Amino acid sequence: MDFLQGQSTETLLAVAVAVAAVAAGGAFLLLRSMKPKVTKILILSNIFVISLFTLASEVHCCLDPENFRKFKLVEKKQISHNVAKFKFALPTPTSVLGLPIGQHISCRGQDATGEEVLKPYTPTTLDSDLGYFELVIKMYPQGRMSHHFREMKVGDYLSVKGPKGRFKYQVGQVRAFGMLAGGSGITPMFQVARAILENPNDNTKVHLIYANVTYEDILLKEELDNMAKTYPDHFKIYYVLNQPPENWNGGVGFVSKEMIQSHCPAPAEDIQILRCGPPPMNKAMAAHLDELNYTKEMQFQF
Ligand SMILES: *[C@@H]1O[C@H](CO)[C@@H](O)[C@H](O)[C@H]1NC(C)=O
Ligand SMILES: CC(=O)N[C@H]1CO[C@H](CO)[C@@H](O)[C@@H]1O
Image 1 (spheres, rainbow, N blue to C red):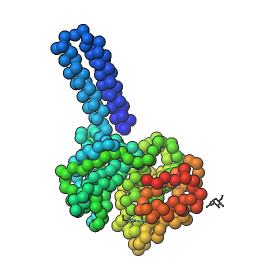
Image 2: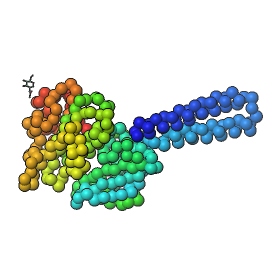
Image 3: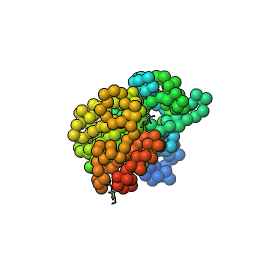
Image 4: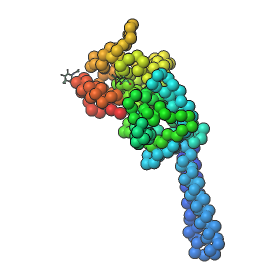
């Protein structure tokens, strides 16, 4: 799907470029010999072709790295007392957001005092989801952008800029990923894991350790458990809770070196450990990984 979309955009672009080139060439040759009226028509037709060209380049790609674009909220689904899933429409039902795997968007909103806030988010949808994108957002009582999302109503518009991020992914880049996620840091991991698992040509193994304070804090749990059930040979999850409920069979406390050793691929040239969590967690994880002899090349922080 992804591939086809890309192709049709390229085809459209190629046609537009060719037409524009021929028209421009024609205009140049004729300009000197022609009457002013004909020149005018030629210039007008060229402007038309150039507009077509601009349009074609925007048919499938909705994001702009330099300018904020507005997307309409079409559905807001409360998942728990402080988590909601926001669904935003793209310009047409076949539009593609245009976000490379593992990259994020920058969202602009207003805090409780009316001041502008910018915050990065990773959609839980992929470019294979046509016509819309979704954000799963945890709203904190004091969070400035949380305020904006709490106030958003269906029909409102969100300003979005992107893509942003250094993460690059190609099928076959690594044999296996280890993922160390904390809290909302699950979203880029979820996106990368989904892209890998839903691609039948991708055999990469994914080992996720997901840490939170309480059971209720675990974002996307149902989706993650479904992925583990559907792709048991490719996807493993180990949940870690600081305050586990009774009869908890996952990890307890903070993510330890031992947990990484038992649940992530061992250091090797063809593996990578990704991390995304609150800054203190990222720092602790980097120290664990260094001590376990994962080289810098084997580590990536979102
Ligand atoms: C890491 O490498 C050092 C030096 O080669 C070695 O002494 C140590 O045992 C290694 N640690 C682990 C956990 O493999
Ligand atoms: C260990 C860890 O990262 N825990 C996170 C679990 O989720 C809560 C709420 O999202 C975060 O505040 C914690 O940092």
